[in-house]
Length: 614
Image 1 (cartoon, one colour):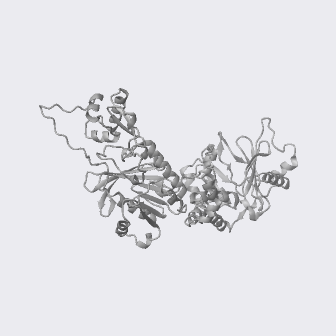
Image 2 (image 1 turned 60 degrees about the vertical axis):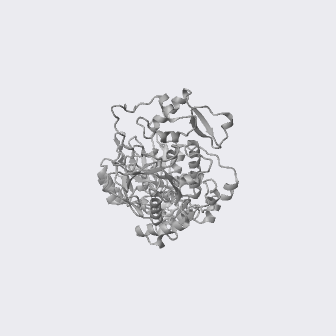
Image 3 (image 1 turned 90 degrees about the vertical axis):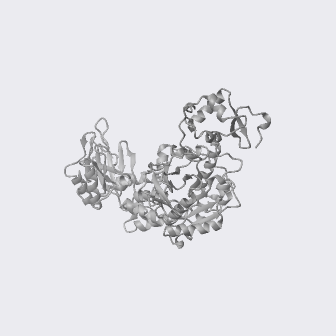
């Protein structure tokens, strides 16, 4: 197989491997990775020595004729036309069919067809591929007919006969494909890179992302470049052009922002799997490799006064300069906006140079790529910032940091209510799509011991916040003073390994010498029970639980959990279960208080007059 693949490549036919005995590509991008590079071909067939050989048919036209159940084939009754076909190389297929290999005329850009020329007659052209000898399928091989082997380079193949050209042109025209205008279709060798760069520039001006540009260029390359460029060259063009900022006016006109802002909201329409796969060929581009992509949100959760803001300030500088964060996570450079409602502008102006100096980042490197908005003294919740985000040009920022997140919540909202928190995260997701950025939300953890909790359980408030976000990153105290353990639950990346960090003012730095499993237990040691005093029970009855932790004064579930945090046998889940059982038995009653209808619990029912109290 390797010898044959190298033979085809030497003739000038791009090849790639397919699964043994099948037509399924073994390359990640299928036919787009077809190549004549001998080193790559040797690597492929060394890894898969039995792989079938596929030839990419861009610039070719292969007539694929199947035999019907009675042994008849197309043109059986037209010997003159059949003789025209037999002037081309002929491959016999495992099912008894025939593949005739022709060269497309220079002013054509034919595509694949199925049953358009005649029943059981297909074509493979631009955007297609065929298996060739000695490949096999269904236990039988492909084979070249004697004296009709493929033994010449593509440019020396004969063109189809005139009657076949006319048929192919007619079917191409019926699909809206022009066949006689080279400047509108085929992109000749020597102009391919420049033309793709111009097309990419036009797409970038109207706001298309790197992934979108790359997908479009792949299709143009397959359809119109003669011969197509290697996939790596096309990707380099997309990456290079995506570095430039889109033109705001062109984006607004192309996307009809005026109509979007004033017209009725678009109704969601389900996509078939085919439409889904064609529309979304790649994942969203990364901002922090391993953690965060464009349009995603990331929580950064840690106890109060842990240095969360210092940590994220270093993260912002890493993204603004394209450096590694914590010497571990690669970033993609982009502009960063920090919206801070805890620190004064003077404090931020003092901190930024401190962190930059320790990271060895020159102030000129971040002078234009980082922006800061201090809201200290003029607090604004996330919903009232709508007009502020509307004023931001889409795509301007790769990352927006909200510090601290709890201060962006409306006054009457309860962070312990799942519905409330889900609503806020939905709003942040909408802002991320509108601004074309990722969000980092700095939040505090609950009080008490964090070492025994799962990653997604660390964080004050309702559990929906860990489910609604794409990355839930937490810092928990390490048993060594001045150290923490960074861990994260991620949605669009492989799981990450926990890592230890050590505080060296003003930075958190990776501490590979520390064991990330050595979390500090914050539970105080309990004195052993004396002989006169029986040991405290580890199993709580519902009645004992209600008598100990509830009263006629309503309390939130979080307050009840906090009161029970040091009691053996009372995990967070056990507290919730005991509350549910007590409520079902009528031992406790649920109260709803305030405009946000916060849920509280008490041993007496709520009166009608107390329903609207704050």
